[in-house]
Image (cartoon, rainbow, N blue to C red; front, side, top):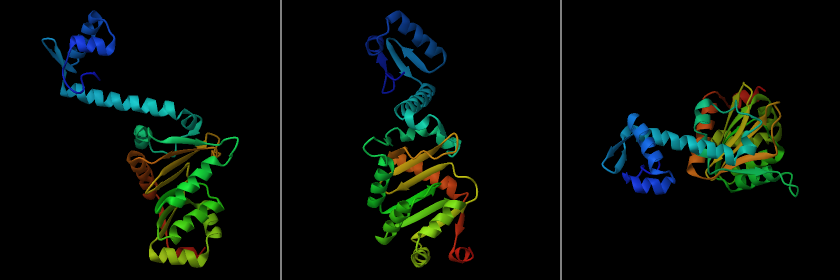
Length: 249
């Protein structure tokens, strides 16, 4: 079916492309013809419209398998509940993303690489279930150079952020609209950042501990679009925080 995707092919071509004997190939073609996935005219075989739809879904399924296989160390043993089912189904959008793991020479390699990417970004949208002081500094630097940041924070992470960020600076950036903060009451089981130049995803182990040893990162448009959808999913659940609310804390 893959061989027929770009147009009709003769039996000899299909035999050479698949390495399948003629008798076996003819039997297979008949089975596909019975399903109305292809038609045969003389020595040529053509995919039907139905066959093309089936093939496109098969290609997507193969890309999913390939994505999981390449990134196996990231996906296995992790809790995927933080990723909505519709985005799990589109996981092949991350096939060009790569895994950043700790090394013996640098136990902070994922976080170091992540901070480097943030330092080069002009803006960021983030779902943060964990927060470090260097992380807050990186967000501040984006704002200092005229960038924007939209943050979705768990309630406990919001309190940490407030303790780490200068109050006067916070007021200034919220008033200007460069900084937007949303708080979500449910447990966040994922950490995601999507900017103009990179996407990163961090997950928790099944026991509820965040995995600081691995990050999935990508730079292609499909990965950025997938990250945007994940951010929007949580944005729809978050409650925007204004200065009046913050002052009451």
